Amino acid sequence: MDRAGGRWSDGSGSAAGVSAMADRALHVLATDAIEVAVCPEVGGCLTAFRHGGVDLMRPAGPEVVADGDVRGASCFPLVPFSNRIADAAFGFEGRVYRLEPNFPPEPHAIHGQGWQRPWKVLNARPTRLELGLSQRVPDTPLVYDARQTIAVEGSALTITLDLACRGEYPMPAGLGLHPFFVRTPGVALKANLSHVWLADGRKLPRERVDVPEGWRFRPPRPIDPLELDHCFDGFDGKASIVWPELARRLEIKTDPLFGHAVIYVPAGQSFFCFEPVSHVNDGFNLLDRGVFDTGVRVLKPGQRLTGKVTFEIV
Image (cartoon, rainbow, N blue to C red; front, side, top):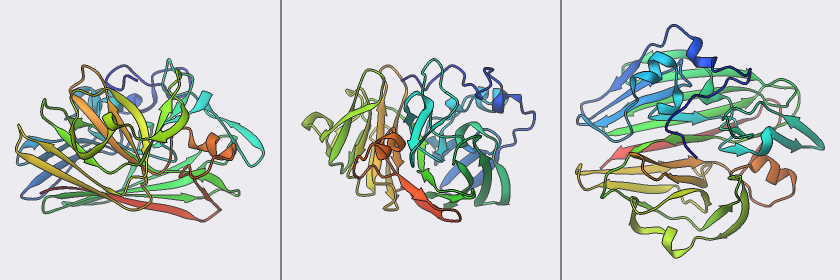
């Protein structure tokens, strides 16, 4: 899947959405070691994450702020689900609900609503930013409040996501983060992952298998020779990325909620993605079909889902 360019639709058939907004202020959080830039109005996204002046996440181009093109961001939140929902429709408690396809030309819905909506600044400090988003997706049980807290301390960036069901009925739910890391010839990833979901020609999960030898990241494996776009499970919440050329090592630590990870290594691009997520791709539909251990949670009215991810240079 090409996440590097193009435009997204707001579901109305136009390329409007975030790009229609006039005010897209950047909030910069900094310590002596790291700097993080956030654009709340463009999907609550990060536009930079750097250590000692060196970018470790892909720096956002001017189109992100100028045009609202979140697909060029450094990182964005995934709420209230990660990755694809097949044909923009999901079954839940005996009914089928339809969403707007939001990733043309694919017919699917992807990554929820949060990445394509403006977030409101709830609290801003030099090292901490709290953002909020309220959504009521028409004719579905997806009625929720989302919160994103972005904080820096020392050499660590911590992002906490919170999702609360605000409707009258239960809703399926998930959370995740979609960082785009700088890709160098020598960059290597280390992560403990037990299974991977193989995808069909429509980029939907069809079979869960043990991770094959060529896709194992323990011990660390160089990223550059690979080409991947798969969801793994059995993630133990600890991963690391090493850039020999940049003399940098990044440790990723997550709450147990994030037991899955999407690894996206596109051919010919200057980035790769290691996405901590709570559930498998198309998880809402797999849950509806009775598939065990999808990672999808069901929130009753008033219930919430919270998870934290820390990125620390060591």
